[in-house]
Length: 311
Image (cartoon, rainbow, N blue to C red):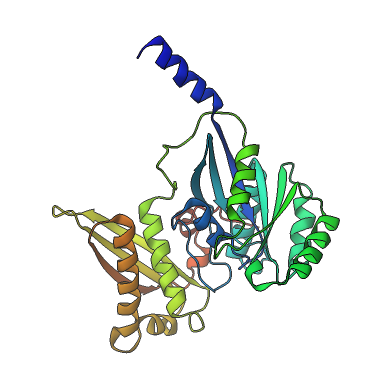
């Protein structure tokens, strides 16, 4: 490399920015949908079931000289169980460790009790704060202005964005603003990397998404998916074995379905999406087991990237 090329490379490196942005909000505010939109690919599962995201999911995007590491946090809510407590603590840890925080709000709900509780904690987070009013495609503009005023009166935000994570409206403006406030520094990941989520864990999350979508009303919250084996075969395909853990035998029967029909449908949907993501043929094998106390097992929390709360 010539001195000139080396100088240009050093200048480019010096212009780089990189930082972390935490996406926080109540369950079903649209954080996972927004993360996937910002990154331009699916890195977080999306369902209608509340509290779908359990651990911190990082998606990586590049905007000009800035690399932004987005952290999709579990929804913040009033915990009732040990798993709930672990998820809420994980969410606030993600917010505290970030360079900037974006509070995502379902604009239709306005400044409700859940939002007020988040604002109360957010006051103590010493980072740049942005507000994203989501789902504006189903709201009148005058109502949006009222919601904006109410939130900023309760806690001033650096900027407020009106977005639709589903359609992409306003998301580019949010991305540009966040890129501008990222601290100077070298990028942490290769330019083409979109997530630091291990493929085995992403595969488990994809199957969990299909499980929730297929059994939204029938299956309680106490279910968990683990990728047990991942084998790359000589023909380029991948063989994946996963176990779906449920809390009771009656739930196992629901997941299996009559003559195994339900588990086959879940497996087919997961296999199709995994093949599209991996760009290779996927052979997926699902098993269902009862593990009554999995939500009290520290090992399961480690699998999900959560700290096990002992109090």
